[in-house]
Amino acid sequence: MASTSLQTVPSSFTSAFSKPQPEYDVFLSFRGEDTRCKFTDHLYHALVDKEITTFRDDKELKMGEPISLELLEAIEKSRIAVIIFSENYASSTWCLEELAKIVVCRERGILRVLPIFYHVEPTDVRHQTNTFKGAFTEHEKCFKENPEKVQNWRDALRSVANLTGKLLKDGVHEADFIRSIVQWIYSKLKEDKKQNEGPLESTSNRNENETENENENENDIGIVRATNVIPVYSFLPRGKLRRSISSWQKGELLGSASFGTVYEGYTEDGFFFAVKEVSLLDQGSQGKQNISYVEQEISLLKQFEHENIVQYLGTEKDESRIYIFLELVTKGSLASLYQKYRLRDSQVSAYTRQILNGLKYLHDKKVIHRDIKCSNILVDASGSVKLADFGLAKVTKLNDIKSCKGTPFWMAPEVVNLKNRFYGLAADIWSLGCTVLEMLTRQHPYSHLEGMQALFMIGKGEPPLVPDSLSRDARDFILKCLQVNPNDRPTATQLLDHPFVTRPQNSFGPASPHNSIQL
Image 1 (cartoon, rainbow, N blue to C red):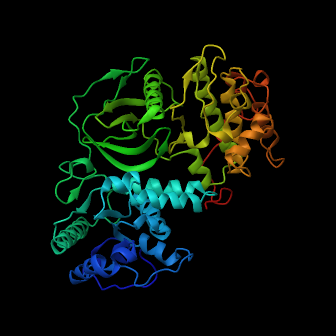
Image 2 (cartoon, rainbow, N blue to C red):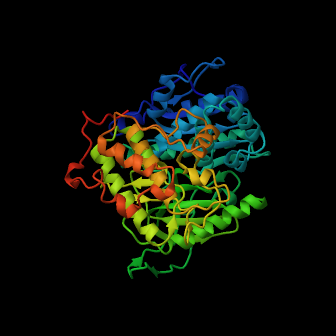
Image 3 (cartoon, rainbow, N blue to C red):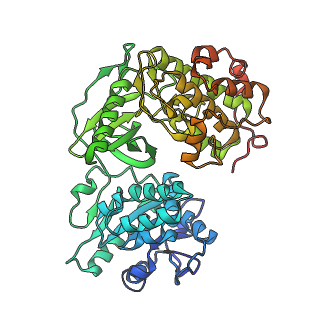
């Protein structure tokens, strides 16, 4: 685990790189009690001998001491992060915070990452089993009020464990192992110096000779998935040609979705897309039910063609996973957007109109989404909005759905409190109202309550608080969506005529640095 005490040497590489100039060639992340005086120390001095500037700490952080700003800045100012996964790595919250920061920097394209599996299996890191499982059991107890933090750590471990790394197995001499690590780092730094790239290329753009984790050679673990699938061309519902995905690589982690994890994908001819990866190894009835939902999602996505619905590109399956190929929407979810910017009324209006267009398309086909919320709505650089994550979507004939599915804070009263009744398309309208409220307030509905408390309030028919500070049109739109009786809610078609979404589209423009605050 790196911290505030630095041991560095000048590097012959540093002066040759393009601006902005990183301060360190390598950042070492490790669990001090496991490897500080042995493996990590040997690796550090081997890097020093090669004149590779390296950041590491030289003392333990005290229990309860927060991770330092200097440490986080050191990660940003490094070219390569070397993460030494040891038996007790996950027991340290500082290590996990470092890891989460490293993943963010990698996703920004400013940092290479090399995971070292020091007498631990990559699958234990990826799936948090064995000692990693015990560590997360404790974290879930300690952070029960902040489950998002623990999930973020899990996602970070899964992301890094899928990268090309090096595995130290019993019987391998540590000196030879360390030498191979230093050679890899030296070659990458030399390569960057030669190309004078500045910001590092994504580590997802690796040579296709690298293999997946499950097919590692003696020491190396690969991230690349390069399949030789024969291209299958198909047509969209309106007769347009659907682009096929054949040979491809799995890149950086984009986020989580229902029943799976979403990554960036990259074909050998340079086409970027999103890939939703779903494990087929889950056991028990719940695992089988999840697979049925995934198959249902694929069946529905094949039928959709609309500018406000993420485009389906194909599916691939192997012995352990299903891969769903989707259009890559570059700016991420509306949830990530409102965390960065304070969205104006006009922007939320424009986004809402597009969401309604997508919902109208679905509802005209008698499809209910059942999980409308900002994290399931994507936006690209042009401001175009796409409904995504159809893992819970279902075709309904006439208010004939009875299962309680969705995300608690956005669920409609009739979904939570069934009482032998059914529900239908109007449940999406309630969720839409919660989503508009979420965009304008920058927090999810019932944010002052825990999940079960929120479900209790929703079941009692108590809608979330709609602040008086919102504009008149916005408040009226939200309140119309949040009618407790589903029969009193307008349809998506009717809401498209509401004043909140019929304002001139030219009022929607780029966020002003003065009016839209970036945090």
